[in-house]
Length: 420
Image 1 (cartoon, rainbow, N blue to C red):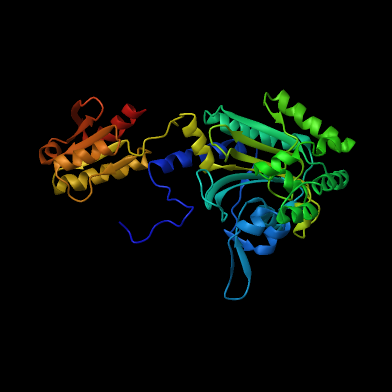
Image 2 (image 1 turned 135 degrees about the vertical axis):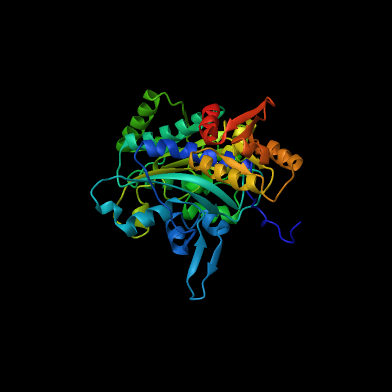
């Protein structure tokens, strides 16, 4: 055993479980590729100010959860706690919004980092697949986002999740709601930190998960009662488009999400089998984020889907994904000449798209066949001096146990046919 272990709140992703995570990432990416989203990668660390301005000074993410460090040159950086601010920064820096084809549609897949109290479904290092459509305000774009996520979850076989939907209004109607909410919250019995939050961003109090706070929020003003006509019409169009697409959702007046940049449409995918960490993904519209970080007005919408939590949701529903075999053929050479000839066949099979492994390390027949069975391969290729002298190799079906000779120059075609 190593002297070192993975840091608290993290875990190593190793085979065979890693194959499930890869399959989930691919499922999330598939509808994005079909809808014209291009892939983007950003650094794992950014200027601290990018997140404090964009995500919000009053959020738990910025005040409690960011990993912040100072470089040798004195620059303060933070490991990214989420992907949207970095993505919008990259779009602005590259001038993608100036190309004239808005929205800029991009997606990413990568690690995020938050210093949280570790528990099942909540890690300090976690993986997300995210999508952002930057530079357009359109109810159809919001609906597209939700539909793509819904399609991705359904493609994995998930059924026991719900979609929560709300509107947070815009800069025209939110100020009046903010004032009404502050007046209500100031009359509650809250701790000093929460009282400070009332003055900075009162909507964040609605997102407080503590039972003693939620109990007092009964009767709190609702955003839906303060929406301007434009926001009402916009939200109704989103709802109509989702309904027409056959996407079931629930209206949730308390849904605010944990980030300050959201406007109008907000949504969350929650799964009943995950306990308190029920959110498996979510997102919304963030029309002011570009301006918050120094860019022009670029209304945008996006989401992030949690890979780790989605894997837990699959386990909760008892779903086993159909994964491709890591090894389809395993080659067992008996003797030096067989090693040379079989290794050539292994290389040829791999180039033909057949997942093939080799008995490395000079194993004897018994141990090599044990390795072949452990590998999960369907077929074993076995060859000794007599086989090579006859121009054949033995092909053994590891499921049925049947074995027979196949001509050396026909092995690749034969195995491809049997595996098809």
